[in-house]
Image 1 (cartoon, rainbow, N blue to C red):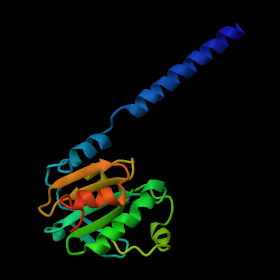
Image 2: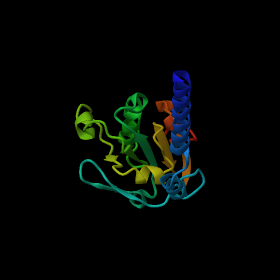
Image 3: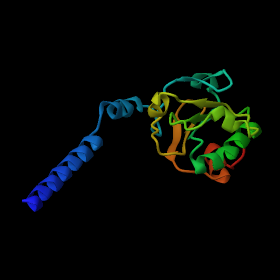
Length: 181
């Protein structure tokens, strides 16, 4: 009798676990909204305009950077590869301010004070935090970081991929003809 009750409890526990796994992995409305909102972030599409408030209090509005290549780096302080490549994005901004605008957009998954973290560095590119996760979703991003979007001077997405970029690869994407401006 005791063995039968124990087997029944184990079976019930497994059924409950399976139900939780199925429920957690069902697409929810937020995922559907994120997919719909990401329209315009695929390569070849015009990226819809957006404005985000930067950590220094200024606003970054995509349309105000028309005529320049815009590089958007999705990153987080807790992402080692993200932090490692920030210097490349900052150098790109510093060396080509007339041709390139860079925005470093931190994930809504904030585990520490982003401004305090950045105070240890001398970055000059603008940084913002997507506190709600809406902008990153509209950009086709997720919790997989780092991710880089490159938008040509006419507002067309020419690159949007997850993964780290070496400085040489970043420059080749921004300046495809010769790696320089």
